Length: 220
Length: 220
DNA sequence: ATTTTTTGTTAGTTATATCTAACTTTATTA
DNA sequence: TAATAAAGTTAGATATAACTAACAAAAAAT
Image 1 (cartoon, helix red, strand yellow):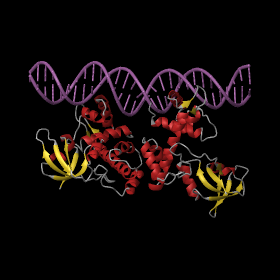
Image 2: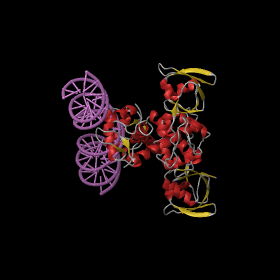
Image 3: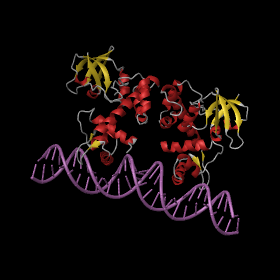
Image 4: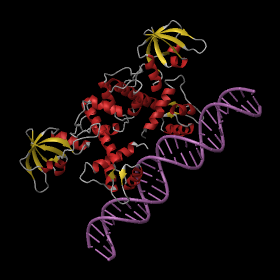
């Protein structure tokens, strides 16, 4: 019973939508939307994954990972984030370029390679987006992260990670002149659309609610 | 018209059997044998590859790579050998461990990654098995290599590369105490089975014809 | 409570890539 | 040259994983 790289994509997707999301179960349509596939394809695939004991699922019900599926997901996250770190540090990839290639690299099967890579990188704790890298046993701190949108007028914070790893979003962040560790002050929060006026490094910019929700911060 | 990683395996196999072999065309059965597949599967696949202009082929005829196929093969060889070098130098992989993982890594699609990797490694000319790494333009010196089996009694040589990259063979070479650059003296060549008695670093060993054919040397 | 909307499933098709079994062509040998 | 052996092909089946179209169940709204 070997797991294809396709199945790995499903496992990771379910993990992101459940464990890392706000709910702990996900529907087939929602999963299909996330993966960019038709609900029909997902429906069929989930049935196969159930027979492989990777997911808990009943017809017309919601999907969640089994213990085995959960462990596989964490291993994949670990691989993905270690590769991202490698690409960023040694291959001169910007933080908006790492995701796509790391997505390919995470499917490489070689426990030794991952152990050695982790060691080569000095057992990093965070990836280029500020996300925690699980250790070899799958342990990792689950810090309850606060998004910029939760702050109020006058509060100051430091950018610690991003919710969205897509190139379009990260390019925008970079273009604004923001990066991990940037210190931000909330100058104004508009009641109308929850957009914010923020100040950082002598710059003053207006950002949307959607943007503020995609940025994780640590209040200082 | 995108090329699957499966098709890439066929291209590399044809390259190894033709350009790197003694003939310049190969039959479906021979290719099937090399790839560990049934002749039927290969027959079907080659037809598809012909329609994609990757191979020259006529029914019941022999297979050879087109210009496009040849260029793709060299790119794959370049990727494979750069990854082998990386694994050997930085990930503590022995020369018998690199092949399998490099075979997975060579399918990663990212021209930037390969450029950066090449640069990171200092544009290496040889991989851990002593094979030449093609440069970005696909150029590489094709030295006519001499195998140990071609030497006569009394000749001395230096091990420069190996014909076979399989773990079983490389482990045997290592076990014998041989490695790249080892200096070898041919003490005896048996007419009976062409086995050889060789001397290196104060050791005297008997090796088969098959072994001697799998080792490339430079006469000194 | 019934209709409508949303969500999810099944059936049938397609594409890739493999297999075995049966058949055909080419090459070798008696 | 005719029989045999080797090499190669085709047909039909299987597995994975996707799709569309049609249908069914659950949830929401009237």
